[in-house]
Amino acid sequence: MKKEIAEILIIGAGPSGMVSASYLHNQGIKVLVVEKATFPRFQIGESLIPQCMDNLEEAGLLEAVKKAGFQKKFGARFIKDEKIGEFDFSEKHGEGWDWTWQVPRADFDNCLAQEAQRKGVKILFDTEVKSVEFEGSRSKTIVRNSNGELTEIHAGFIIDASGFGRVLAKQLHLEAPSQIAAHSSIFTHIQEPDRPKGKEGELITFEVLETQVWFWYFPFSNGNSSLGFVAPTEWFDQFSKDPELAMKEMIKKLKYYDHRFEDYDYLFKPIKIDNISRNVTQLYGDGFVLTGNSAEFLDPIFSSGVAFATVSGLLAAKLIVKERNGEKVNWEKEYVGYIKKGVDVFTSYVKEWYSGNLQNIIFHHDPNPEIKKQICAVLAGYVWDTSNPFVKKHDHILQNLSKLIELEEASSKSL
Image (cartoon, rainbow, N blue to C red):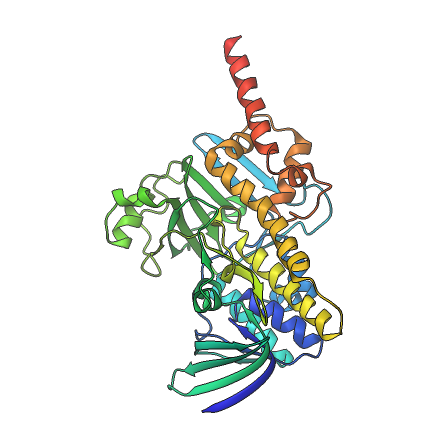
């Protein structure tokens, strides 16, 4: 059996792993990345939010992504019946990026991995983790490549950025119930040679069919588009068991996009993921840390997945550097506490989206401009900015505002 030694072993070459690997490599720390798949490979989570840009820039990956020519994303549109709520990231509370991208993840993830390799990061693709053993903070990980060859990797620390593979969560029995009610998703891609020009063919759109049922449309710069539905798991029971037939049946329920997508062939058989939210009992331990979706995944509605993947990957790397420099790190406070603050804000927004309270606000006929800017900043991912009352008071402010809107509407009807 071959042996490898690394200061840091990173499991997973997605955005979280590549941000960690690139940052650590830039700081002179030897990292080794193992990735189960061969890139490029399909992945979901195709719409980024502006906060991602800060993390990519600090990790030294932003310029490579800029050169890739992905579809720029300047905001998002929400549609329900005849109501439309649009958010422009340039009109938000506070500082921060006012644009980002919507990306085919196969191309985006491959772009990050290639840039990390160009810098000198070693990535073992097509290599699966078979077992992990800890002796104090040091670890011994057995991996196997596609040829069946085993390698024993000795590392001083492990960053688990394995995403939905959730390697350490499974190995160490850290799985926990989600904070979010059970929702499932089905999605595919189409090729759109006749895509409308301008905003209609560029802006990502969420069409709400019912309070807890919604459809996404993400156009890409390569002419393809991503289509998907998210709903309570039991909602899908009314459709065909065949994913392709089920997708066509769901497409017919669209109102705003009535008939637009009915005649397209799917570029791949629609993929269904049941109970998409994930959680764990702990984010770190002696000799390891969980980042990105390997730790927790909320819901795709506000595209927070890659943002939390990159911010957690970057923060984990920074704290490792701090420890390597002889400084004391309080992982509970500096990592868990920080990540939890952001997750808690987005959790409130996801819950209030599905309760209908946030939808009442988004689809209000006469939104307050300042409130809209503050909510826009949250949707852009700036969920640690407590100068924003819609961050600071996230646990009750959406409910209170929704009640005021309902009272206002009831009053106007009675006049």
